[in-house]
Image (cartoon, rainbow, N blue to C red; front, side, top):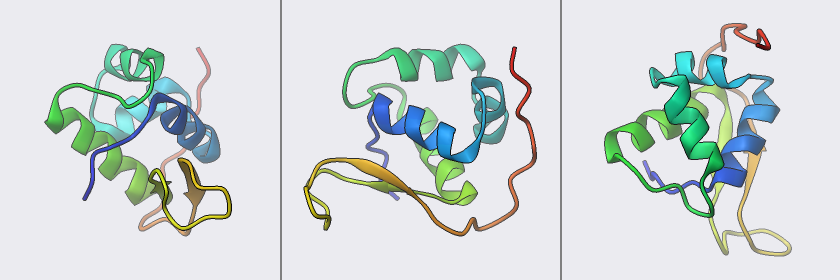
Length: 96
């Protein structure tokens, strides 16, 4: 499993899943301030490797495929893609 993700990918992945920051925090067992810090960073998210691994694992389990720089795609660049989730994502989408 790779733990390279940009803040833009994180925001896009969360949007694809229909999760708010609190929902993503619960899904990844991270704190809301950690999710906020990650989303507010520039470019590739840097931080605690364990936290990054938890985040990426949660997104991948929920059905998000992270597309790395220069991965096979028409225009290159980074992105996210929604695929069939490995398990059902609990509905934790309370805005607040």
